[in-house]
Image (cartoon, rainbow, N blue to C red; front, side, top):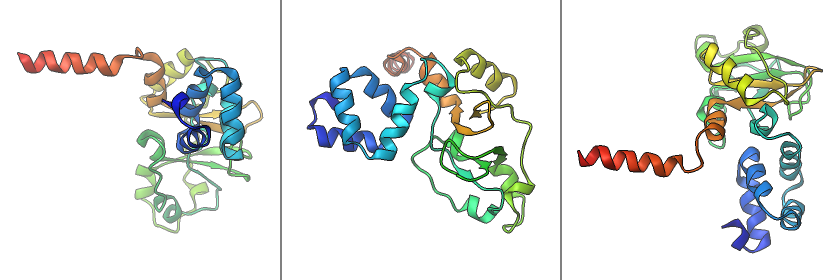
Length: 201
């Protein structure tokens, strides 16, 4: 579909997609067309896509969302709860990642995360830096999907922070991202077939 669009329109479509999805799509295009579309995208969006495309397939870096909810430690619970992000999966939207400036990925020093369930139990003026969950293990960008899957399953998590060896947050990889990678490309069609057969019974 993207290949059939006028170039500027295709670039607009990529701009509004999640960077990890846009990177997957661009990687499927002929190199000349891919570079042309990246040049037409908004510079910040294109930078995220290019960064994701540098990671090997089936690694945390290639799967992660580069635009999770990030706050500084002095932000409040009220600020966290006021965020409305329909552009990211629910599994990531329920968590705020706390880091030193800059808050754009890759961030300053990553400090921890705050789950929405914890935030809802705190007074609105509570500083996020005082209620951090530091126990959630992070993964490096080059961690294989097998490692990501094992950690998500072992600790019953929906999201993991992706942090480099210097402690900078690069993004977050969610169970949604992992399932998209592990399931067959035609899994939606398969699901419809199964549903049809069950209803026929």
